[in-house]
Length: 452
Image 1 (tube, helix red, strand yellow):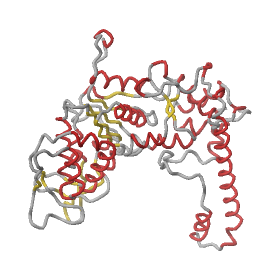
Image 2 (tube, helix red, strand yellow):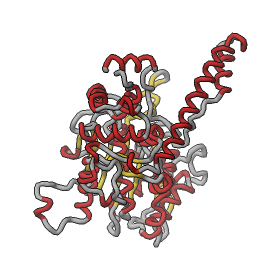
Image 3 (cartoon, one colour):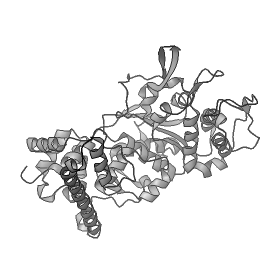
Image 4 (spheres, rainbow, N blue to C red):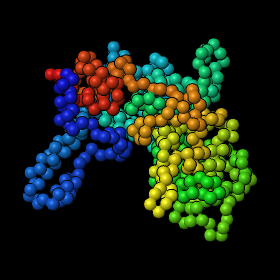
């Protein structure tokens, strides 16, 4: 079995370097024009490539036909509930309607999501691993894991402590948590599910699905007033993302700090021509007015992001959660460099960026969750991180054997696995071969054959 799978894996070219780097609008079609462009790029004549191009197009058409056929079969399967069976005859999909009502009995079952509702509650974007999972399975559903329930209940206890103190005996609620663990153990999906739950509960959540973007790309300069590096393009994007879901909440929350907002250099327009270095916030302004001013005035974008962080700490009317994916990118060097001499530069650390410095610290009384992303990591971080409580790190594991059983039955239900090749012995071999890595299991399981 191991040799058979590995031979087929080698023949397929191995897993793509970043199989989760896809968009939700990905098409399964293959452009024939692309093949023609490749032939032209090599400098060979069209006739020389005609046979190869024809074979490539035929393979692409066959793959597309196979995907369309599978989609039609899955659509027909929806009308047959007898197929929704998990390990030991358990229901494969939970009937619990909301993330808030999920309990321990729902673990190792799948929770169905509606893409329209999911995109509405997470308008900043879905984790790329979640998008890839949905595309391969042709179903928007997530595995209910105990790690998510523990994380959800931790923050639920903070906002709504149980009346019976004995029920929470021995479980100390933490306001600051860093999700860590091996590659492809579900950190980003767990964080996204937490954000969805919190927003459905009516919380104000600042969700950063791509923390790496705060330290890469765009325009940057050193602000002489603060000594930090400002990134106005990223600051405007941060404010726009925050406004997408939270607009109604922000319109009801008054600004607690009415000090003038410091102005900096605008993206592509330089400093204010009249020399103005601050912008007043009128009395009675709401957090919506604050955020909107940073979007409309590029000179104020960075100052508004820094002020917003302070304002969020002062909100008492509703629970506030700050959730940051790819959090480890804020403890390494950014993409930016500062000229030192004519021929040398100095890399700028993420902590020197004004936006990162404002949001990175967990040494406060606010509810914060950061998730490490090892697919975007640069070097290994030390165990005790600056600005992070010592006990904040929570390690998530890859699939347990029970979870892997549910995952394999789900992929069988979604026709990723040939039914004639599906046996407990075969899927367990794949589980042990991949060491519970979800991405590798999803890639290896379709390679199983009945003769394995």
